[in-house]
Length: 76
Image (cartoon, rainbow, N blue to C red; front, side, top):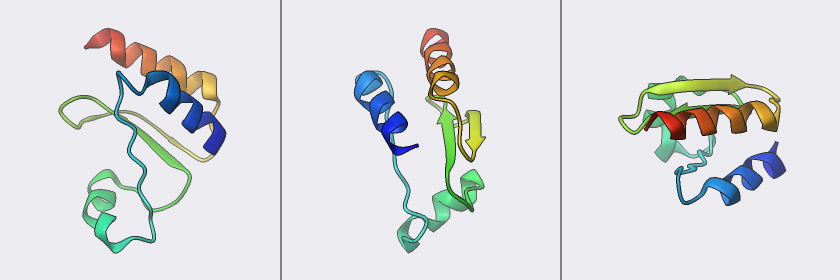
């Protein structure tokens, strides 16, 4: 998944903030709890107010993620 996510990050970095959380880092615990992140891979697409638009657990198609990102950008 890493190459897919990093590729999307490179492509949309000027329109979307990509944030990577380390589940082993105790400093991310509050945010992980708020999102419901307890396993990896787990991806969230949030709107500008922080509401979850989409989420994926496990391996996901890069095309599916990109379509959701494009839809979110169009809605803004």
